[in-house]
Length: 408
Image 1 (spheres, rainbow, N blue to C red):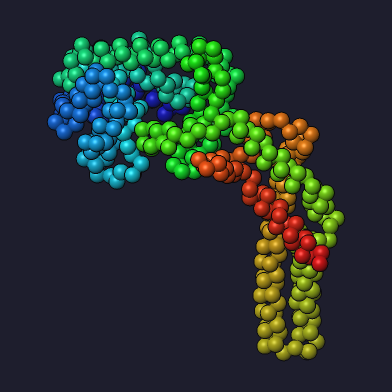
Image 2: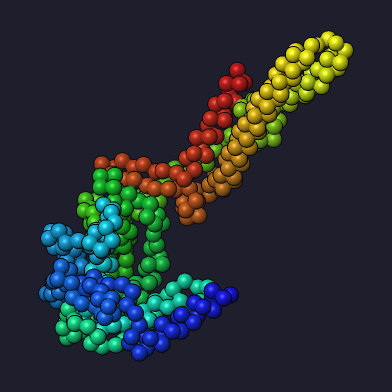
């Protein structure tokens, strides 16, 4: 409670300082260096020119993807890479690259117009909620607090272009909401291109540019900020049919063995690994009881003069070690039995989910979400459907094979 009250006081103090404009600046912004002594941002001669050229390219009509291409061509370090390399001396992962969101963040940052902005994100401490982004009208803005990198007129022009584009996309999304609901992605982030390794994008299409609505949907291997796509397409309806065929085949395979698996789980079958383990556990229990009985009889033999002291100690140590060995074997066997029973339970649970496919073979989104891990397609027509339950099916086949071997 004390920590929470302290955090509230700290937050209140920060808001007071931010309203006055004298809050302590905690970190620098890409394009600037932080003068901690004067609590002020100053232009960084190494990165400031790249911020300025990004704005210049955008106003010339370049989109974010074209700006990324040019930055990569020039070998410009990303903001994260520059900070890690120049300021912190940390290694940078190979996956760190320029992306559209990074370019857009620079284009929308009012700091480059010479202003200091507070309150972009807030946290409701008394509800233990994470930080959230606030609306622009709720920001606390202090103008002309440091040297601008971008003239204010150019910054406002860029903001206007971005706002107009966002409003257009929002309006377009509302207009097409009916078609988005009718043509929804059945395999989100699951369709992969075999040639490129890219995740294929769900693409709604119309032969008349949406004048008569959306006619269909496909998955397209297209380029993004990082990868280059090969532009192969695969029809969504084709994938839905192919995937449900695989699920139905899996249902037939699993459900046909329901009776045998049920017998193995119930212990009524004398075949299979579970029956072998049960017999092994019973035998270990028998050997443990025999070892305990013999160990108990040692003292009686020693007292009756049958055994000498050295013999008594030797036999006693032997039985102690034997009992430890048997207890370890018993623990391993019981653990193996628990794992096996859990595998059987997973198989039978899967069978219950798949049983409905035998009656209704229409597309079932719930089963697709539960069972399909990924769908890898090729331009040549090859397709690989990977199941989330592959390990369960593999274990089931092993159980059945062991049952057949033991039966023979």
